[in-house]
Length: 261
Image 1 (tube, rainbow, N blue to C red):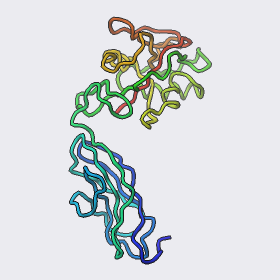
Image 2: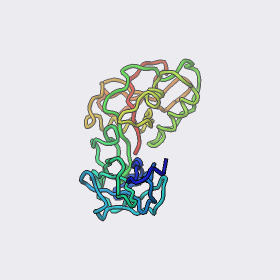
Image 3: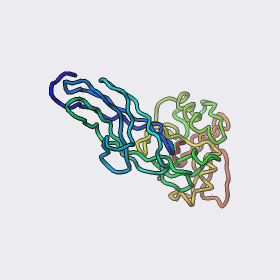
Image 4: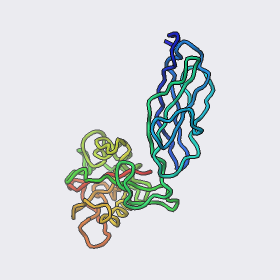
């Protein structure tokens, strides 16, 4: 109920999203106005815990009940921030639950721990790239589901095509436990559910950084790139140099999931 009489507001803080080097988005939801009109609302943030409206680092998002969205600005790259929604009525100011987040670093580096894994590729902007899971998801799993003669047309080879390949494979092959579904449906490292089986060129980048990342077996790893109806591109991480070859999709190879940022 919104009218409880003689009390301060009750509210929650909205999850922090759209995080960059200097900005982020949050907000709040006022579930009770305490029996008096809300005269001010917004979010407040700081690099110290329990920020209050005494700080200059806050938003002012009008008045009234319900939910609101706040844009945090002026943040510093690579810093941990604490944020709380606030609401004020004639009975005082109260705060929602405290959340914390880390702004994007000035530039990502290979080997950096981030986004549920380890960064192994960074593009020319320094702000986007690929993250690999810290351990193998399987030491031996087939690429196909049950029909090894089913062409999926997951033919993307380039960096940036692995996620679409994975989606295509699953759409064609359906449910079950195989390389693509293990990455996308059964693995959620770091709380993320957008992991996927790397394309051939993404897998090659992973091979090039295998010693920085660590934990790889000197064995064959699947890519998501299909060469033909029954042949799939893979790479041997025990070879002395970058290599690729095709293997029958009935083979049982290692699986390591990646995600993009």
